[in-house]
Each structure stands twice: as C-alpha cells, then as structure tokens.
Length: 329
Length: 307
Image 1 (tube, rainbow over the protein chains, first blue to last red):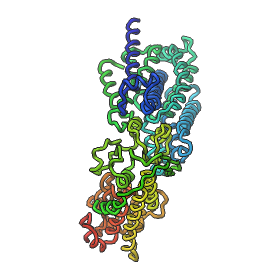
Image 2: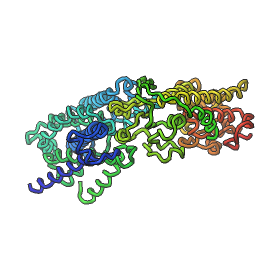
Image 3: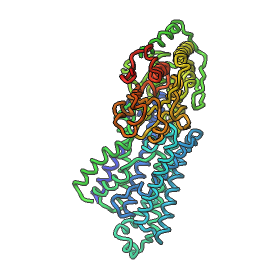
Image 4: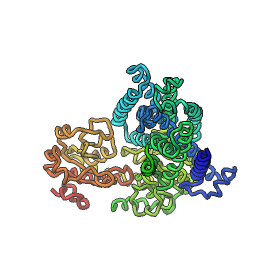
C-alpha cells in the first residue's frame, strides 16, 4: 500500500509540475514573476490576456481532454479485451470529423464559429448510435467482435464521406478542415473548458465507479456474470460513457492520437491492471502527457506551433517502446 | 523583381509629404467584419505573403513585426517567422502588441482570428482571388496604414501594367491554357482563380473555364480530349513537375502542347500570390502565350519559349 501512496504522490507532483510549466512557459516569454503577479490579480493587460485568456484555459482543456482520452482508452481496452483498443476504435473520431468538416465546407462555421464543436459532437453521437445499432442488430447482446467490426466499418464509411466533402471544398474550407482533423489545443477558450467540464467530470466519476466490475469483466464475461456482475449493463455504461467522453474531447480539440492507446498501457505496466487504480491513474497520466506535449508543441517552433499530435506520437512511441522492453503486456 | 522596383519608384514620390491621419480609421474586411483603428497601423503582423508585400511597399519594412516561412524577400529575413501561418502562436502574437493582424478568413471556429478579436487586437481577414479584389485589398490596406495616396498610385501602376499587357495581346488568337497545379492527379486552374484572371489578361483562355471549382481535379483523358495549346507548370513553393519530365509521362507526352514544346515553367511565388506583382505575372504569361512578344521583354524563363 505504501508503494501505492508513493506512486500517487509522484503522479501528483508530476501533475503539478506539468501544470506550472503549461501556465508559466510560452512563446510570448512572459517572465515567471509576471505570471505569478497575473495569477494574484495584477499584471498589465497584455500579460493578463496571455496568461488568463490563452494559457490557463488551454491548460485546463489539456487536463480534461488528455485525461478523458486516456481514461476512455483504458475502459475500451478492458471492455474489448484487446490491447489495440483506443478511444477512436468505435468510429467516434470519424463521426466527429464528418460533423466538423460538413460545418466548415457548407459555410455554417462562417456565420456561427461556435457551431463547429457542436456539429462535431452531433457527428460523434451519430457515429455512436450507428455503431451500437449495427452491433445490436447483428448480435443479441453487445458482442465485442461485432462491436469492433461495426466500429471499423462505420469509421471507413465516414472517412469516405470526409474525402467526398473535401473534394468539393474551396481552399479555405479545405485548410480549415484539415487543420481541424490534425487536432490542436490552440483554439481553447473558457467556453471550451466549460463544454468539456460539463460532461467530462460526471463521466469520469461514473467510469471510476465501474472499476470493480471492469476487474471482474477482465477475467471473463461468464465469470463476471457468475460473480454477480450485471455484465450487459456494465458494458453499455462503459461503451456509451467512454464514447461520449471521446466525442466531447474531439469536439473540443480535434483528433489527438496516441494518448488513449499508450497512456493506459504505460500505466498498466507500471501499476498493474487493477482498474480501481488504473482508471484514475490513467486519467491523471493522460492529463500530464497532454499538458507536456502541448507545452512542447507551443514552444519548440515558436512563434509557430507544431501540431500536438506530432509530439504525442514522436515522444509517446519511443517512451512506450522502452516501457514495453522492460515489461510485458 | 526588377519590375517591382519600378512600381516602388512610381510610388516613392508620394512618401515625402504623406498626410498623417489621426481620425479613427474604419475598413470592412473580406469576412464582412468592420475594423476600426485609432491611428494608422504601425505594428503589423501579416500571415499572407502577398499582403505582406503590399504592407512593405505601402508602409515600409519597419511596420512589419513578423513574417511567415513563405516570405523569402531578403528584406524581411531578419523578422521572426510565424511558420506556415496556419498555426501561429496566438500568445506570441498577443505579446508583440500588434495594432493590425492580417490573416486568412477561416471557416473554422477555433482559429487565430476568433482568439485575437476578443483580446482587442484588430484582425483584417483578407481573401483575394480576382484582379478587382487585388485593387480593393491594396486600397483598404492603404487606409489601414494611413497611406491612401501610395495605395492609389500602386493600384494605378498595376492597372497600367495590366492595360499594357492587354493592349499587347489585343486582337491575337487566344490559346487555350492548362495551368497544372499538379500533374498527378491533374489539377487545373479554374477560370475564377487569380491564375485564371492572369491568363485572361495575358490573352489566353483557361482550358477548364467551364468548371466552377477553383482548382478542379480533372482527368488526363479530358485533357487529352481538349488538347490545350499551352501548358504552364508552377515551380517553387508548389512544384507540379517539370517540362522535361512531362515529355516522358504516358498520356502527357502525346499532347500536342508537349510535342510542340509549348510547356512552360513559371515561378509559383509569382503566380500564386495575388498582390502587387500581378502585372509582372500577366506580362510573363503573355510572353509565354504569345511567343513573338518575348522580343519586347526580358529573357524567357524557359529555352522552349524561344521556339
């Protein structure tokens, strides 16, 4: 138990350090004393705008989206009992992208810029509905294999729709759509934080509460059933709540890859696969990872920014491989 | 760039006693947003190369705070680069305290413009495709920079250049032109693009003028069927292939234009930046479309032009 406490403390310290770095460092080079001054209520208008309107909401979006993606990845890996499972495996990203790209291409976004995240959310919900309808039609209960296949098929279909939309898009729409699909935290505002928090906080609590059932499910669906778990209910809650978390994250910052795949595995290698620990630890580790990746994306090429997905993959993959060498899945 | 310095010279006479405008400046941008400045812009961040060049001509390099990776003008090399201009650091821009930011209009809600405006930074979103829009852009930037007279003379200089090109090609047969942005898959300039307008001024007809898309992706089969008189390939920031390579490509090598050596390479920067250099672009195009004209211009870009 003491090892658990030590690790939890280490994670908390890392989290605090990542947050301080995210708010304290940036392309504008605001001195750390000024940042502290701003947080205490002082500072000039420019410094206040940079810290309070740009860095702080962006850091909070990184925490909520990074945590939500890693948590969803952990839940999908448990439910599908497949190490390749990741947040986008059920076609959520494809649906969200269709919603956003359609909004951009048909000019909705020009009149109501805030409509794009909502359209992305609508697209993601459509994808979730479609996948679950297909899975329900085919099998009586939620069959893992059918669900995976439905996800792959629906994702492929949405991909075709996106390519069709982009073929007829003008230059600006094309640029906006591609930029959107690359995933970025650069558009984060306090509105984005609110959108994320409204869903992500209760969803996180609900998923944490399923940890014990997920532990039993990991042994096998039959065993879990004999031990008194309402298997279908747990699966439905898990899939739906996690899919919605992914949908909200994608609506807020586009498709950011690798966090949802790598972070839960990394946490599992270090902490073991007890979901009561794995789920919260994945959330916090996902937050830390996205905070650090975004800070790097903001500063390395400054005053330009790199796509954050480039950092998550470039740094995440070697990190993951080194973990993989030291332990087994 | 030689001809550009001519433009600069013609505008220079206005710089001596330019009026200092101190009343609020109001301009409507291409997204329909009204921009109000208390005084002429002194610290400008432009994320569009053609507009950057116009700011430089009208207000001087010292008014520019940053450039993009696409701006290759040595006079701007000392400025920090905001990279590809699509994903600049918003906080860096805010930290520079610019009094004018020039950006692409974006159709997406999560972009630079939507982040800068609430923070009180004036953003002029600029979209230029036609020749009329070039003049309009220059005029409005002139107002924002407090240099309306210089803007007027730049517009007049460009108009004069275009008129002389139009006069030179008037009455000549208009060749059909395939401006191939890409050869695989073939992508052509539509008539409603800036390139289409330049080709039109230079006495040519774009091959896919009937298509409404700006840059339609077309089939090689259709190109073969339509047989363009001239093929133009941009080279530079967007290279679509070389005239030499085209002679070996199946399908392409059988085109009359390729067999007749009427494939020309042009500087992509010149043809893809609707701005102050449009007159030079038109003159270059005219000399390629109407070979006898080359006698009255600087040396041809391509040996093929000397047929």
